[in-house]
Image (cartoon, rainbow, N blue to C red; front, side, top):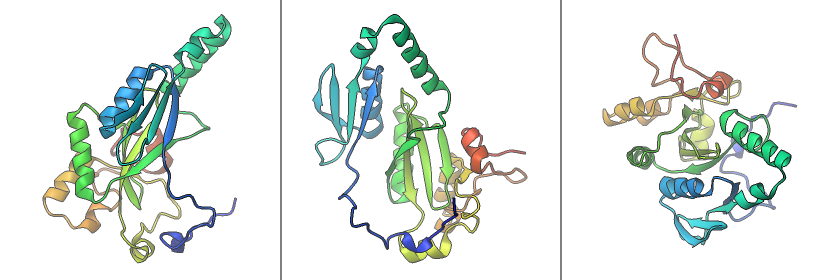
Length: 228
């Protein structure tokens, strides 16, 4: 497939088929109570509707942003062999990264100080991210829900099309995944008054004498903040 990197697309394009916005995500789960509890805890959701079968969760003015359906009864009604296969599939999905399917859902929190607040407040509620990475245009923290789905919360590096075009990481075209980072180190830089341009630089939390973990290596080693 031909490589395309169209810097002029950002903030300058709207498809004639574009919806008004991305409204909600829906999950099917046999881990129902834990899934509902996780998203209530992560985003402070309140249920518009909740029952033993399905829950619709809201975190803003919309009627719901997250739907979670309980499929436990369906699983229990399966025959022995299909049920065993499905249980193994569920187990593997939670333990081993898949090569096909949805990778993650993502939410934006701007500016960076609100993003830091979210990180530390979530941590106080017992939520630690699985992965923290500077993608080169956004920086994200990824949480893993009880079913193994990844949820990203990111802040934008650029506030205008010109900023994006002129300042996106020069290596982005060849390495678009990003570099693992340490949010705690980044926060220390922020509190010490580091310029915003320094806060969004890839590899900025890597200790002197160490090397960044980037690209596919970062995906494979999500918890590895740097290497020798």
